[in-house]
Image (cartoon, rainbow, N blue to C red; front, side, top):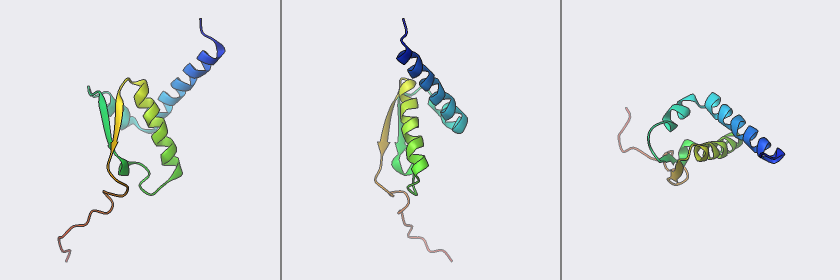
Length: 90
């Protein structure tokens, strides 16, 4: 028997799924890959420190958990943004 709180939580889960799948359709397809662990480089999210992307990342993490998969976040802050090339541009 579901309590009112259980129903609210289920509604929130469905709202979360719908939002992520609407905002990130390519991500939804990627999640369906038969892999147990999703790996992100931390620079892929909020590279310019945008508040909205922090929120979206939190939602993505919860979404991944709902799929039964795990997430690993790798890298150092601005690691990919600070890579310099030795090639000259002329």
